[in-house]
Length: 110
Length: 114
Image (cartoon, rainbow over all chains, first blue to last red; front, top):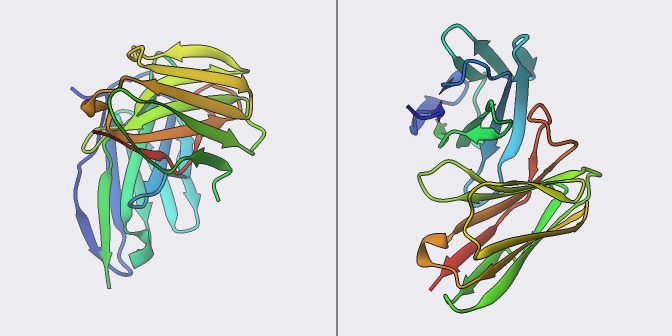
């Protein structure tokens, strides 16, 4: 089992809809969870991070953690074509490293 | 502008060449990282420096040699690379090296080995 798993996509949603991106992790002791957005040919850009103490909302973005099922979600409300990118999930490991998933490609069509 | 600048943006080199990648961060961070990003694979951590001391070497071949002269600069020296080393090399920095600290990435160097 991979340490951090994401569906590679593409996930296609219409403009204005809610995009839901999921990430599962294997280390039950993980406590830090990060979402990065990466446009083609560009660097990963931090969007949100949450700790094991709860969910977080920032503008159109909400990060949710389900510790029992070991997955973390990123919801993007009112999706825009400019949100089209690859979204990387990263989780801390018990060896104190960040482990990244392979990313989910999101396509928002007008 | 991410606050982390990498040069060059693109590099093509032969297997017998020696070259260096440079990273500079303007965020006042004290930890710096090198990652490798290959197609269809997750980011792979290569090296971690904290307060200019290497604290992580993630089983990286010796043909990759990092250098951190101060907390703002990080280099990756390359020599006798292999075709499978072709990838995007990303530098990142954070305030402290605990994984609770968000890492900020540069735009990367796209490396192609002939």
